[in-house]
Length: 395
Image 1: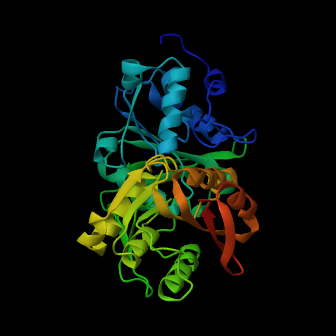
Image 2: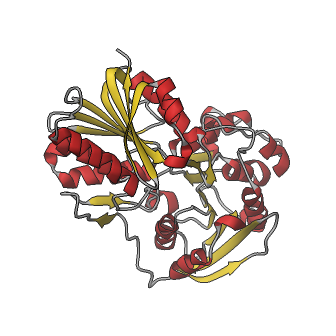
């Protein structure tokens, strides 16, 4: 597509679909705008393949660079699969389809193929400091010695710790002035003495017989989070006590598997069960796979792990038991619809008489939705922070 747009014209055409959408949610923000404006003087002299975009939520950075600066061969990394799909749909809106879209950008994992020889990196700062640590380590290890990293975010989501993390891997880190409540950090001079990529990381918990893996963007890191702990305690008590499940589940789904703690725990608790673990996060899928492999061949052989949107990897009526510890944010925005769409997806995947076992922050008040979408519901546990519900799909 030869005709160039202004940045505002480009952004006005972008949508969030198939990600969670609502009037108060947008496909771009002030940080996207500021990142592209700040980086613009550095983009003109780049050869195809020398621009890398990381954390582009719905394609604003990638497509903005393509439309306004004429960049081609852009390499992108987006941890959520919905981000990749939104980028693809937005590319179509802007006229980049088929071979033309592949000429504009290619999607990668966070690895050397993404960053080798990169001279400019545009980074939407992640919420998790571990995620920034992993990204910065990869850039310093693989990008060109003269690489310039532009890392942007909204002021309210940024902290001094982000500067400190970048300074571990780069000799020069500076902060730009705030514009429309957004800011860009600029990092140059990759440090030869940087520690390197320290992921995956592993964690142990006294209540578990296996280790937990995590990458930077894995929700909760290598820890046994409190919500999952409360959910699993109820399953263990019912499995060994008189108030057991109606029948032993043979097909189990861990929806939003994170580091794999629930999937592997379920595989150990129900040694005859087949497990599907699914998450839209690339970091979660990689972590769950490693957690299962280290737990033992028997566990890994009975488990399949998918990077997917909700229940799309699970056949209709397949699951006897679904375990769900849903997120309550999309990007950096708290929004109930994230969990709502996962709960609604469970109804299709559950077999008649199958159970949804869900844990959530009590203030989210998901019970009416669970009852409406799944069926008869009871409270299994509740503490000052979390509620665990069991809901049975009607026969």
